[in-house]
Length: 312
Ligand SMILES: [Fe+2]
Ligand SMILES: [Fe+2]
Image 1 (spheres, helix red, strand yellow):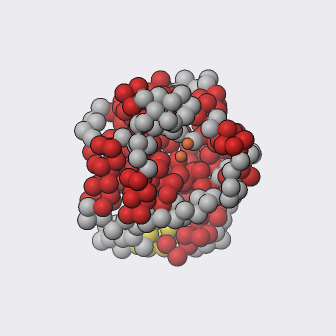
Image 2: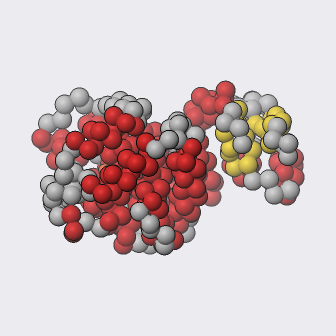
């Protein structure tokens, strides 16, 4: 697949009857792309059904239409009247698109991230067992573009690190994928103005530090969320040196998947170019900052993660 085109599921495109603000392509067997729908033109729904019958899973968007597509996805987060059964498809499509933002210049890592995206999608499928809850989760995360992207990136990098550490159990990888995806959902209960402040007061910090518990409260009644996912959410800010929050756990008291998510979280926050504080560090700079933050992360996990990111 060429990097000039972004895959979008056929199901996603077929869920819209109105004209779309971007061109839609199919990939022919010779690896070439053919435009099947012009932007802002009316769709032929029967034609889409025929593609679905032929088992074509993906259409494509030209990278030149990236901005229009992203605006379209963001606009969909205002989905009060949108049919619930389409929500997860939208969510998954939005996530695939976010993955495309990566530019790591490390082919082995990119392959591993691509493989991890399958685990992550499977994790998110778990939410489908409770469609109403999935809608709430999506609405909460999509209320902030940064948070939605951050959630997906942390989930992806957590799964890649877990595999590197030799974790192979499907259940564990699903829990890490979902735990990474939902780790900051509690932030949606915090006044957004706090995140855009340059300097935080002690009171602001106290509020931010409540987000792991808020996360558990939001997901309290969701039966799809197992105890491993809940532990990841509540422990993702605990630190190796016992100085983390909310419970100041020592290293050996912290659930290993929560330590994995903590490393991925630190890295994704520092490298994000859309975060509230625009940290925008290069991967190398981010890893140096994390290494200098002595005692925060599990040193073995951080070492393996560093090697995984920087190895060309
Ligand atoms: Fe967090
Ligand atoms: Fe985070």
